Each structure stands twice: as C-alpha cells, then as structure tokens.
Amino acid sequence: MSEGGMSSSPYSIISEGAGVAGNICAFVLFVSPIPTFKRIIRNRSTEQFSGLPYIYALLNCLICLWYGTPVVSPGLILIATVNSIGALFQLVYVLIFVAYADQRRRLKMVGLLLGVFAVFAVIVSISLCVFESPNRQLFVGYLSVFSLISMFASPLFIINLVIRTKSVEYMPYYLSLATFLMSTAFFAYGILKHDAFVSIPNGIGAVLGILQLVLYFHYSRTNAQVPRAPLLEPYTA
Image (cartoon, rainbow, N blue to C red):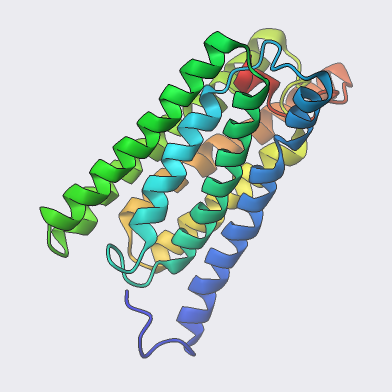
C-alpha cells in the first residue's frame, strides 16, 4: 500500500508504528554481539569464534535494504532504514573480526566479504537492468525471503542446543524476547502493508521466537538457572 494520501489515517499510523517498533527491537539485536567483540579486542584474538554469521547477516541486511528502497518497493522505507543500520553494524563486526583473525581466517573472511559485495552488486544490477516494476519487487522480494528464512538456521541451532542440554545458559532471555518482538512487529507491518515478502518470513520468525521463550521458561524453572553467557557464542561456535 502506498503511503501517499494516507499519512495521517489511523491505519497508516498503526502500520508505521509497527515498523518503528520493529526498528527499535532490531537495534537491540544489532548491538547484542558487542560483548563478544569486546572480548575479541581485549584478547586480540578471534579464538574459536566464527565470522560466518556476520557475513550471512551482512548479505541478508543488504538484500533487505535494497528491497525496502523506493526504487524497488515504494512505501516500505522502514525496511530500508532498519537494514541499513543492520548492514553497518555487521560490516563493523566483520572488519573487527578480520583485524584480529589469524592469517588464514583473515584471507577467508576478506574473500567472503568481497563476495558479499559482488553478489549484492549483481542483484542490484539485474533488478535495475532486467526487471521493471512490479517484477523488480517480485525478484528482490523472493531473494529477501530466501535470505531471511536462511537466517532462521541460527534460532533452530539454539533451540536444538537447549533441548539437548536442557539448559538455557546459551539462550539469553532478552535476546530471545527482542527476536520475538522484532519479528512480530515486522509481521504486523507486512500484513498492514499487504506485503507477503515482509509478513511471511517474519511470521516464521515470530513462531520461532515464541518457541524460544516457551523453552526458556520451561528449562529455567526446571533447572533454576540464570544464563551466564550474554550473547552469541552458540551462533559462533
């Protein structure tokens, strides 16, 4: 739905409010790896952490950023804003990882980073040169959905870890809550904007967020544990 002519309607206010809420919750997720990278900088080593999640997240943010731009999807500027911020955070994380990795991992990460920019450039070029609206939106939309669903591998790994270990040590409550709230907000934003490319993957993310919270409350009561590790070690092991 176009924002033109409805900027002051209750419907538009609610939809934009959902988008803003999604941006705020996403920011919590973007800053969540900071303790991990403070540790890397303090120890001057990437230890056993992997940089791959941040490479994947960077590509995902770039694709979704492009999908939210007016030239592809008019009226979804909040998708562009949140993913532009996310791409900046992921790029900083990757550059820090490169700075403190050993020679072999540094070369691998630089190659992957260049590959991400190359893939993104190809996507932008094809979408501009080959497709006209609305086919351009369909092309980038399908890519964004595929990218977002691929990102759900991380929550699935965490859910599997919690079930296997019967411990929520590596599934922080506030991180799970922020994931659920962000996915729910963007699910609502996609529904209100009549955009399945936004609502469907975030609906899946909301369901996975609920599952994480249910598991958290179940196992935290069962074992009376408080999570000790603040962040993404399960994603980066």
